[in-house]
Length: 316
Image: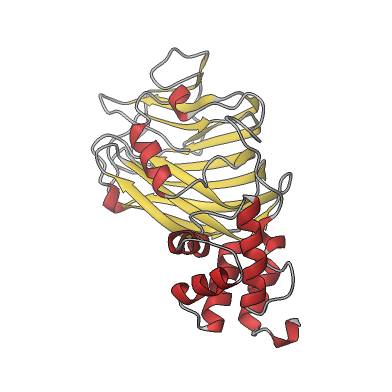
């Protein structure tokens, strides 16, 4: 039957994710959502227009038994091979607070002093955040001549504890930053989806979308870069850790025009809290320092430096 399916739709059915395949099927058949809803009603399955819209945009996914019945009906109405959409949904997501999360996971409220803006922006993207955890990460932070963080290039090895097709990148600019001058670009293993900004908190978040659905236990490598065209003065950089991680590297490159008088590494359970570990670090001949941490517990891991009264925030 796949021979009767358009090549673009056939590719979407093979690789997913579910919402892309559904959207391509609806487009290929030329059925408005109102007509599709009417056909579902005729088959004895009742689904709201809003729900159909959410399904094809990826904001929600079918999970309940009656919703899965609707997906089976959609396959028939859209002339698709049996279970071609159902298989893209993968196993049903675990339910309950903390379901499917690695042991020892923390909430954003356990880590950040003011998580409200972050939670609000994440909510605007739907329930996509928190389905992956870092196995390892490597951040290369470049400090600009004026003392601000000009760019952060990140390489992550992630593993899914719930089925997902995207990673949510979170970046906190330093006080005084302009979020309109901050951008996130995909380098490998992903593409940039929806982007959200909050100027008051200096926050920018972006979906990094994969070309397939990552199943539970599967790993994936992504690379992306955050750039700030006019960074505010900074005195530290840290990566927040919600789930226990196997390995983490943070490398800071200082400009040739200036060096801090003191640099130290730190780990702390939460923003604004006392350090559980602190150690001074020498600056190497290449004007850079790095930390390599293993078996990292949830909290903050980063590097701080002293060259005046400038201040900074961080990045997840």
